[in-house]
Image (cartoon, rainbow, N blue to C red; front, side, top):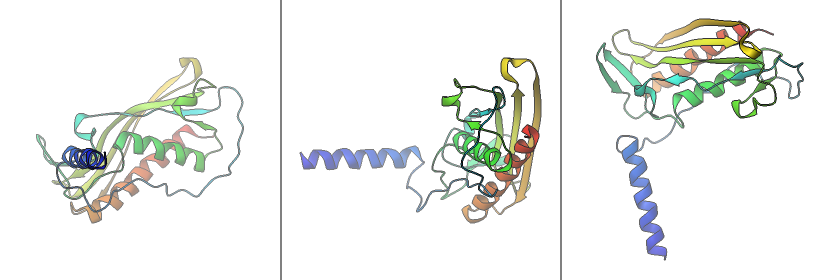
Length: 192
C-alpha cells in the first residue's frame, strides 16, 4: 500500500513538473495589493455592489508561466518563473481587493452575485507579460462595466508598463506593480 502511494505521489509530482514545462522553479509568485487595507464591514443598497468577473485571457496566458513577446509572432516564457495560479484568477483577485481597499463599495465574488450583482465588471486581459523588444512588462485590460439589468454599459482600456530585464527577479515585481496600477485605475473608474 505504501509503495503504491509513493508511486502515485511521484507520478503526480512528475506530471506537475511537466505541465509547468520541466523542473519546478524554487518558488512561486503571486500578485499582492499595494493599497492600504480597508474597513472589514460594509453595507450597500440594492444595485450598489460590485461584481468583478474573471477576465477572458489569450491562450499564451492560460498557464502559470509568464510570456515573453520576442517578436510580433514569437512568444517564449520567462525562465524560472511560475505563478501560484493563472493570471486571470490572480488579476481578478487583485482588482477585487483593490476596489475593496480604495472605494466604499461592497465587492462580491462572482459566486455571490446572485445576492445582488450590482455593477458588473468583466473584460479581457490582453497582455500580462514581458515585451523583450521594449524591455518592459505590460499589463493591458479591456474592461466593460454594466449596471444592474444592463441599462448602462461602458468600456475602457487600462494599461501599464514598467521596465524589467526579462529575469524573474525584475519581471515579478514589475508585473505586480503594473497590475496594481491597472487595478487602481479600474477602481477609480468604478468610483464610490
